[in-house]
Length: 143
Image (cartoon, rainbow, N blue to C red; front, top):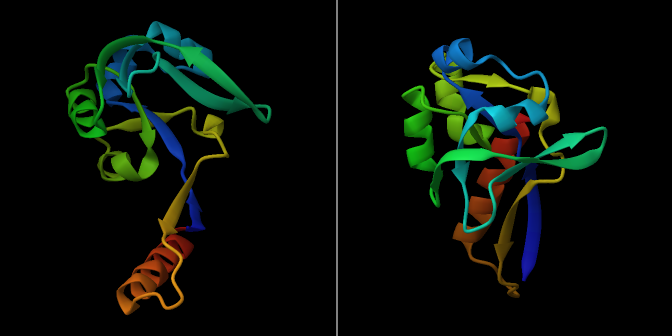
């Protein structure tokens, strides 16, 4: 198996401006324990991980809604019902439009990466080579 590191995944803590106006904007990740979290989970406990001073720091949460797919969580967040913590690329359009507002940007963990993994072959297909070139070029432009 060949694994290629493509890009660091940056996370965003976000909610609607109305939610932040009602509940207050946290200045530290620990303050999220007092908010309505919309959590993405595959059976693990409700906890978000942040990086503080170079160390991972877990914040236990009160989950208002838990899902195994992030898409419904974004929809619920857009209704002003809670806070999501997802890869920035998943919420970028909503952040750009102002529908969601990100906070705590300096706390995203630095050790989460997007990888491409594929079977090792003597001659990879042209389609695989084109896909890898496209992915690498796309993320180099965004960096």
